Image (cartoon, rainbow, N blue to C red; front, side, top):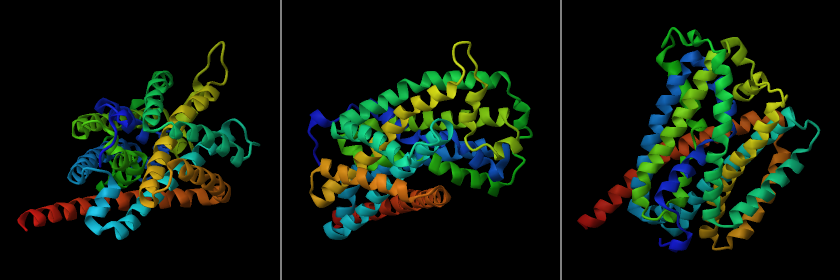
Length: 361
């Protein structure tokens, strides 16, 4: 599939796009989740999950290079146009549900920490209007927001980690590897969805100029986020005790409470507000992938599909109450693991065999 060069991005920008796709609200709470069984050895699980992500990126590039297009083209080659569209619809459904999960997570943080009486539908409308504005500008605008989501927040992240390190007890991490292999695997599984997001490459690959040359930047982007998540886990584990961590819903966000300035009392307000850049970039990328895929499947204008998706997202945010949010997140996690870490390798194997049979034929 050929894309006009005016709409394509340089290969090095894939680094920022991968970063943006992986870093969302999950980094604020994943420490508690991965430490449930593996304790403070769970940071090993983050590193192992990062290795699986690197392998997954390699497989995606192999798959997309063989099809010379996106995941919709891959499905058409393997299953035919009609059945292929059905499989592509499942991937698009995941992108949309994942965006709703991110949106719900950020709205919950705003309601708990800043505006407890503000309705979810108001927040979702405000955020989605901003996201619609970004996505309607095209993929290059989405990548530009991804670049900003990397550039600005790094300053706040560095400041955030400096304060707890001064009061850290790194002895909390000792003894190392005193949990079973199965416990470590459980932390790997929990980390996989936290590090999810690279699957957006399945849709935006054709928009990369000389796509094959961008692979090293995709790997570097995933490596950077893996190290960032690992460092975040180590900082939290060295600051909290295991009992404290188990009862802290957003460990990284709670670290902002120890930051006091003579001119600023509530640093968390700035931190949460700054996070809107990160959330907007991630939502824009996911909704762009979904609307782009549905445009190719149904041959409709992308802006109309985006409007429908945005409206449906607002409705779903209203229907999913707090008691069902955990079940919804678990469903998205399982969907991610099966679709991308089980289905994509099988799809790559099938496409490789088909290519070889055509050559031999």
